Image 1 (cartoon, helix red, strand yellow):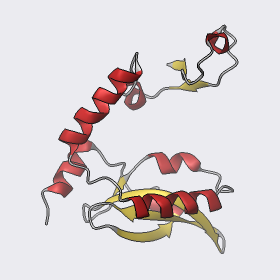
Image 2: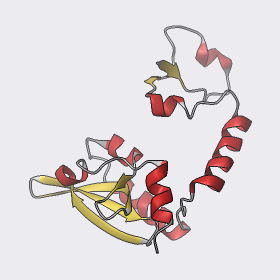
Image 3: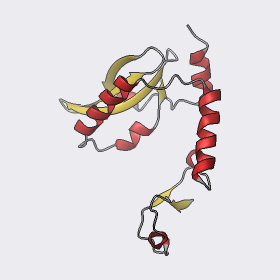
Length: 143
């Protein structure tokens, strides 16, 4: 499905097609996160936060990730940052930046449950499965 994001306040931006705002392709997963109003989106986010069990991100971690992401603006595969992964040991891995090292890109990540940091070659990182809500709950149940 192709959609437009309702981010502009002036309705003239949404006259079309063709639209003056970016059209995006929604995957089945992203389609489930679409809401008709901001209020519905907020309510859904609160329910998810209360039921998912994800520990979130401390302010210092968010600041560090934001600064590193800004420095990695030349990284060509930015969509990789939109998906947490799960390592073989069950740890949830949150990618936030990448930097060039020799001939490979190194993906920097944060481990939200242990509040630790790491990095690995992009070629290895993309082999990790995308984390699901079940993976997060399973990790929550571990010490």
